[in-house]
Image 1 (tube, rainbow, N blue to C red):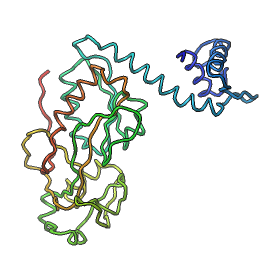
Image 2: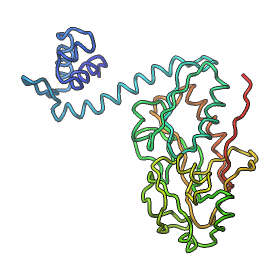
Image 3: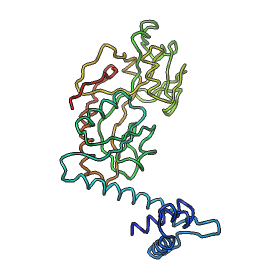
Image 4: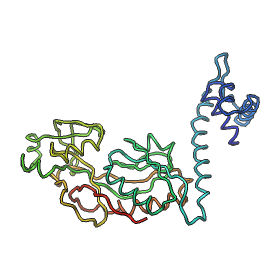
Length: 310
C-alpha cells in the first residue's frame, strides 16, 4: 500500500474535506484528490462518500482508516528506530506510557537512573490509568500492570510481577491496633482506590474478594498512598522492590499480608516493528533489573533520592 496515498486519505477523513486537508498539509487539493482516487482504484471499492458538506468514509474506508493509522504509526516508529542502529550512544526521544498505579517516587528513581546513564536520550513519560488502551498510539512502549496479560495485536514482553497488598503506617497501627483477621477490618479506617474494578471489594490471595466500606476513596493511586503514609488508614497499595535494596526506617507495615492482595503482572507492550530498537532493548533490560524480583512480600518503603554521578 502506498504510504503517501494512505496519508492523503487519512488527512481528508480527519479534516472532513479535500479543501481543509490541503490547507492543513499545505499541498494542492488536486494532489490529494489524485492520491485518494488512486488508492480507491487499488482497493477496488469506494472509500469516500462525497457531499456538499464534505466527505466521510464508507464502510470500507472506515476499515482502511483504522488499520491505515496503525500502519503509518508503525512505519514512522520503525524509521525512528533505524536511526539508532549501529550507534553505541542512545540519543533522541523515548516515549513511555506509565501506569498511574505505579508509585511516583519509584518511577522517578527508575527512569531518573536510566536517564543519568544515557544523558543524550530524552525521556517523555506519559502517565495514564491504562497506557496500553489509552496511550499506545502515541508512545514507543507502554507499561502494563494488571491481573491478566493485555490482549492486543502488539508485542508483550514480561518484566516480572508486582504485589498489591494492604499497608498502614506505624503511627496508625499504634493508635488503632493491627488487624488480625478479615473481620477486624470493619473496625478500621479503610482507604480505597477508585481506579480498580470495585471500590467496595478487596481481592484475596486465595481467590475471591472481601467486601469493605471505604472511609476515603481516591481516583489517584498516589493520593491514596499519601493518605496511608500520613496515618489516616489502611490502604491497598502497589508494592515495588528494587533488587536487594535495604528498607528505610519509614517503611509502611504490611497488614493481613497472607490474606489480602494479589499478584499483578508487569509487562512492556510495544509495536512488533520496534522489538529490535536499541533504545527499547536497553530500557527493557533496565526495567527487568529493577522489577524482575518479586518472590516475597516486603514492607513498602518510601524511595529516597539517590545521588547519581554524571
